[in-house]
Structures are given as C-alpha cells and as structure tokens.
Length: 282
Image (tube, rainbow, N blue to C red):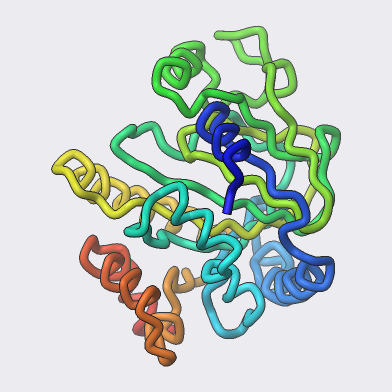
C-alpha cells in the first residue's frame, strides 16, 4: 500500500511513482507476449493504410497469460482499494503501442467520475524519448478547467490559438526504468513528446462503483464513450474488432469473487453488452 507520504503526494499532485514494482523477468514476459500480439496487428502485417498509428488490444485474454494477471495483481489491487475504497471495480486493462507524440488531454473531464490508471511501460523512458508528461495538480477542478480554457486540449505542434507546443508546457516528466509504475488520477492533464514508434504500455484502469444519481449518469455516458473509443482504435489495430472482455475472462472458471463482482458491474452498466456481439463471434 502507499505510505502516508505517497498518499499525500497522490492527493496533492494527482499522481505518484512506484519504483521497481515489477521485476525485470516480469517485464521480459510482458514484452514477449506484447510482441506476439503486435505482430498480428494491421501495422505489422502491412495492411494498415498508415502503419504509424497507435495500436491497442485487451490484455485480459488467455493467449497472454502473464499480462492477463496484471489487473488482479495484489500489489496493484491493494493500492486501488486504498485510493478508491473497497467497492472499486475494473473498467479495462489494455495494451497499447504508441507512436510519435501524444497530445495534451485528460482521460476524464467529468468530476463525478473517480478513476485511476496504472500505466506500466515496458521500456525505459525519459523526457527525450516519449516519457509520460503530467501537469501536477491538474486533477483538481479549478486548475483542470483553467488548463482546458487555456486551449491545451489536443495540442501537439504550435497552433494559431497559442504559441506553445507540448514540450513548452511546464510539466513533470515521468522518467522510468524497467519495472516502474506511475499511478495517476484520470482527471490529470498528460501528454508525451519526442517518442518514436512502439512505446509499449499496459494500463489497468479502476473506477469507483457509482453511488449517486450524478455518478450513475456519468457511468452511462462513460459506457458510450468507451465503446466509441475502442471501436475507433480497432480500425487501426485489427481487421475485425477484438472483444474488450474475452470469453475466457468472463467465464471466471476459478470462481473468483472479486472478478465476479467486476463482471456483474460491467454487465449491469452495459460495458459487456456493448461488446457482446464481438465476443459471441470471436
């Protein structure tokens, strides 16, 4: 679990580093599985119109057994529970191969949403080759909205409405060695700069089970957004969209109560239904 100092860091700045959470052997296993999946994408088969595009897929399937365990790893779950409470749930766990720059954006602008992300990069990165950049404190509403009004959303190169590019914005560079993990609040503004092709990341995302009417409305909207995002990413990754929640994961053959709670949540709010047609034909 996070120490008091780490917890204060997360609450104050919106993120916290966990150095050496995974071993080199674990990262090597993740990389081996990642490579096998990447080789079947449109980018690597030569079928993509633009091979430089970002590729992404679910890491929950049994064909990647090491990666499939990440979202249920006790080292991560204990922190997710500490930050979100005991009724937290998984929303997704995907692998992504990033290319070039990632423009400034938050993962959420709805403050009825309580979601955290655990990006696990599979190679060392610093501010010169695509490390994640975060604007500390931008997970809090006044500052978050001030940045939105400033015009950073989607900013990559210098544009007519601003004289700044990604690298000009004051930010914290998440320099990392193999095995490091950075946890961040999904309201925080983030980007990357200087990276080339194939920056590899696995990203478990956890959220708090909605309790209020506003949180429930947010969740229904999130389901729609999640579906549209995954639908768009699929066009650049595989000829046919793959299931977000593979059937072998949904089967929960070990009868794990935590996973079943997550499956019940995903079913109740329509996450699984949105992807069921794909799952039925996979």
